[in-house]
Image 1 (cartoon, rainbow, N blue to C red):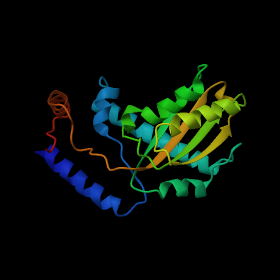
Image 2: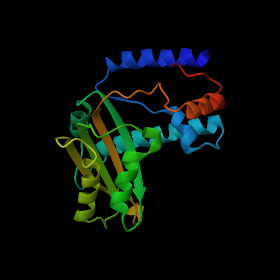
Image 3: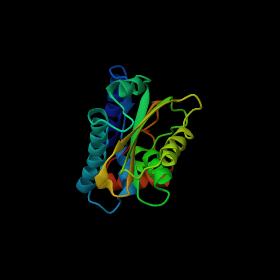
Length: 204
């Protein structure tokens, strides 16, 4: 079946990529069914591409734009060099608990789902209007750090953007994660639903 062939190709490519990069970040397309089940397949993949594009743009902005608490390319490289697997997350909130909510959203987006409790390093970039407080920045850092290993390396920065008007955004890059199994879907019913939806058969 084409599904099995693609899964095997993906597995081989993953193993080859591991040998060529410092950190490997993977987005699970099957998660699209949980996030946007009513979109067409083309729209769903466009949605996933948009998330990835925003994440990459966020990293570029961190490196290129000076911040109140600055993060530069050397900081990003230090995090990426922790190696293995990683995840990029984005979150935002404008509520009274915006700091915690933005951080939680950044580390729990379903499309970027991966176990992060063994994360060895994290780069945290906080973007806010000038109203951000010291305590809010601490809450973002504490929220992310509490989900990682106790000795995780944390590098953080703050960028001020007046146009955010009360909104706080958080970009998180977490690395040093263990290799996830992206090619097995637990739960027979869920697996069969996804196979039927995509018209493929996943490899065992």
